[in-house]
Amino acid sequence: MRSFSRFSLWLSVFALIFVSGLTAQDIQVPVIEDGQAQIIPEFEDPENWIRHDLWVETEFDTDGNGKPDRMHVSVTRPQQTESGNLKLPVIYETSPYYSGTARPPYDFFWNVEHEIGEEPPVRTEGPEVERRGNRPIISNSHIRTWVPRGFIVVHSSSPGTGLSQGSPTVGGENESLAPKAVIEWLNGRANGYTSPDGDEKVEANWTTGQVGMTGTSYNGTLPLAAATTGVEGLEAIIPVAPNTSYYHYYRSNGLVRSPGGYLGEDVDVLFDFIHSGAEEYREHNRRVYRDSIIANGIDRKTGDYNDFWAGRDYLNEMENLNAPVLMAHAFNDWNVMPEHSYRIYKALKEKGVPSMIYYHQGGHGGQPPLWLMNMWFTRYLFDVENGVEDLPRSWITREDDERDQPTSYPDYPHPAAQDVTFYLSGNAPERGTLSTERTRGVGTESFIDNVSFDGTALAKANWTNHRLMYVSEPLSDSLHISGVPSITVKLASSKPAANLSVWLVALPWEEGRSAQITDNIITRGWADPQNHASLTESEALEPGTFYTITFDLQPDDQVIPPGQQLGLMIFSSDQEYTLHPQPGTELTVDLDGTSLTLPIVGGF
Image (cartoon, rainbow, N blue to C red; front, side, top):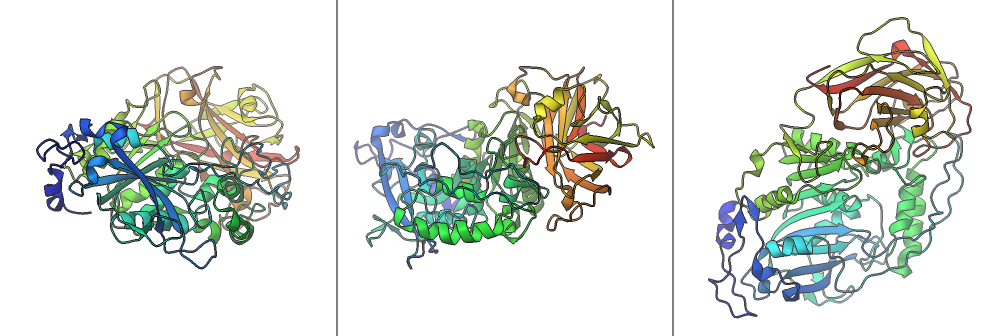
C-alpha cells in the first residue's frame, strides 16, 4: 500500500473544474466527516459524469484464437477528472452476470433422482445465452453511492461473458487474472484499447490507481480472486456473500449437495448459465472447458475432494493476499453458506491481514452498513487515518434489529464462547432427549430414509420413523451460540452408501416465524459417511458395520430466547439439497458414540 505521505498532497488538492470555470479554490477532495467520505455537491449530478468503455488486454488466451483475451470495461467518473488536475481512487465491481444469463425453463440442471455412488443420468445441455446490454454502460451498480463521494466507479464483464473475450471457467485462474489486468491498467501497467481488436490505446490518467473492490455472490467471489494475485493497487476489498470454494458450494464433506434453491446445479450448469460471450467461440469454450476440464473434475459419482476442486478453493491461494478485507455474509444464507466467509476471515487473522467481518440474520446477500463500507474504503483508498483499524472486529445484526444497526463484538466467534457438548438419549420414533449430562449404555436407534418427506415436515413431526430427533429441556435463560458447531455421529447403513443430514432447530416449531431466523432452523450440515476416513477417497460402507464421522455444521451467531428448546434432527436425504435415492435405506445410530458440540457464550 502507498504511504500517507505520498498522497497527502493529492488528498488536499483543489481541482480546477474546467467545464464550469470554477477556480482551484472552489472544490476540495475528499471531504471527510466522522472518518467517512462525504457527498461533494459538484459530483452529484449524473449529467456531469463522464461514461466511457474500453477493452483491457490480459495475460491469457482462453478462447484459443492465439491472441490475449481482452476484458470489456466501463468507467463512470466526475467530469472534473477530465482535465488531468484531479485524480481519484476507484471502486470496482466485475461480474459474469452483466450481459445476460440463461433463461427459464432451467431444465439443464443435473437429475438428482438416482442412487448414491451411481453414475448420474446424462445432463441436458444448457440453452444458448442471448447476450444483452448496450455500450458504454455495463452496469449502474455503486455509481450513485460512490461517485458523489469522490470515487470513480469501474465495471467489467468476466471472461467469456458479454463483450469480454475468452471463456468462462467458473473459478479457473483466468477469473483471478482478469480483474488483475484491469487493476494493472488503472495503474498504467497494462494496455487498454478503444475496441476489442484495435490498437488505439486508452490511458487511465484520471485515477490515483488505488482500487477497492466489492460485489455480492459471484460478484463477491471475484474481489477475493483478484486479491489472491497480490496485484499492486488493489488496496481493499468488501466481498459480500462470496463463494470462496466451489467444493464447499457444490459438495459438503464428501456429499454431492446442491446450493439452496438450485437443486441439481453444478460447475458445468453454472458455465452454461453465464456463457454469454462471442458466439463464434462458444463451441471451443464448451469443448475445452465445460466438456473436458470441468466434466473430468466435478465427479458427481463420489463427491470426493480432488485437484479440480483444490484449484477452485481460494483458501489455497492466500499467500499473496495482502489487501485489507471486510467480509459480509448472512447466517441464514443457504445458497452461499456462511462458512464461505468465515473460513477466509479465520485465515486472514492467522495471516495478519487487516480484516473485519459483518454478519446479519437474513438470507443471501446483504452488504455491510454504508457507514462501515465508507470507513473501510476511505481508510484504504484515500489513506485517511480514520481509526477503522481500532473498531471492533465483528459486527452482527441481532435477531430483531435492522441490518444497518449491527451490534459490535471484539471478534467472531465471540471470545467468551465455550464449547459445550450435548449427548443423546433415545425415544424413537418419538423425540428423545438432548442433554449435557452423559448417560452410558443408551444403545442404538434406527430410521428409514425417505426423501418424500422434506426437512420441515420431519422437524415438525412428533412421531416418524424417517428421522431421529433429540430435544433439550426448555431454556431457562437466553442462549447465545457463537461460532462453529460440530457433530460426531456413529452410524451403520443397510446399503453401501447413504446421505447424512443434520439440522439444529429451535422448538416448538412456530408457523410464520420471522424470516430473520429462517423458520426455526438454527444451523445445519451434510456429510457422506463413505468419507468418514478421508475427504479425498470414498470407502463403500459395509452394511451393518458402524463408522464414526465428525464434521462441522454451518457457523452461527444467534440468541435463542428463554422457553424454547434445542432440537437435534438426524436424517438421511434432504429433499432440497441432496441426491434423491429410492426410499428404504435403514440407518442405525449408536447414541453412545454420537454427540453435538455447540460454542456457547458464557457456557451452558
